[in-house]
Image (cartoon, rainbow, N blue to C red; front, top):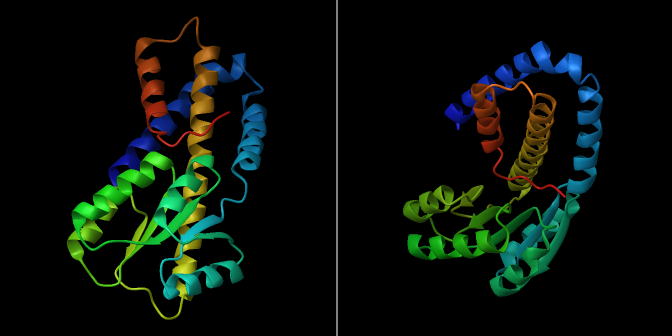
Length: 213
């Protein structure tokens, strides 16, 4: 993650220098256009606080109540199959569910979730610690794996809020970077150099979670 962040910062710096040296004079309204697009993306993404909880045990029912009291929009289902049918609508930002203990079962679960909604943030809760299953879950894209559900949910609610905020902010930035890439390519279409195009295409490749109309 640190390496990707440094690469991203370097590419943003290069793009900024390219914009300042060549694009600004030919495309002076770029800044205003990006502000308009940012507002549109914010409206499209909404608050980013809709959580689906698979209430397979009393602890998760209690967690649902805590998340609702903290201001999240909470939906509940009783079974994973129902959750997987609900996800393709694309308006759920996070799913919380109880997971199996074996790494192989975790892998199958995460594959099913990603197939239903590739951009979904997933929080897995297991009744007993299992380091292998936890590592497998994190490798496969789970945002958080809790070996036990704490009796007091305050810390977990704060963690969920932080995850959703960062995920939404990243998606907004990814969308803006791709928008900027498209505008720069258009503005420089008659003079862009191969190395500039490769740089911009690489920048575009750093946005894997694009959601655009």
